[in-house]
Figure 1 (cartoon, rainbow, N blue to C red):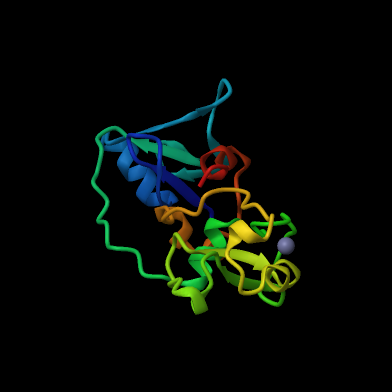
Figure 2: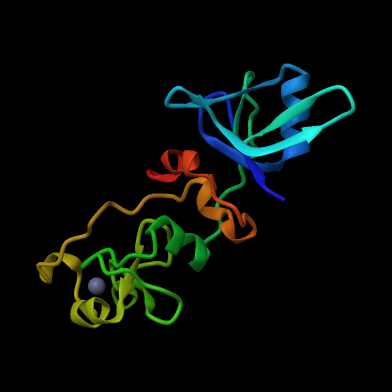
Amino acid sequence: MKKVLLLNSDWLPLNFVSGMRALNLLLKGRAEVISSGDKPSLWDESFTTPNKSYPIPATVRLLERVNRRYTAPRFKKRVLFNRDNWQCQYCGVKLDWTSITIDHIVPRCRGGNTSWKNCVASCRRCNMKKGSRPLSETGMQLRKNPAEPKVTHYWEFSYVTNWHSDWDIFFTNV
Ligand SMILES: [Zn+2]
């Protein structure tokens, strides 16, 4: 079953929901189908009742903002790697579970902790090269400043089997 990307009223991704849930929100006037270019963001599927056919939206936006529940983020490898886009934060090489490592920017032996701000994804080569030196002594540079992850970094996208190209822009900067 194709999923619908539900955006909060501020255009930030909130969740993936079922087509039925999205149609329900639309019929209740709680959401709108967004447009991509000049076309409404739809799947090429419809939900048909005896009287009417409803196209299944691909992306809907809530008209009234909901506050998502925010829990203090716990450090998790997968979330860190999502945040860093599965890329070495020093050389930019693309990584997977077999090649990825965590680099402590301030090394643990110098009191660096395991936290969102002090950890980045790194390939083995860069991690070895940096060793236990502080970053300033290595001449190496981070591609971006490590920050707390966003809500979408916690998501597992693996259950979304059909990806709609209209969604790309909502995930490029996450
Ligand atoms: Zn690297």
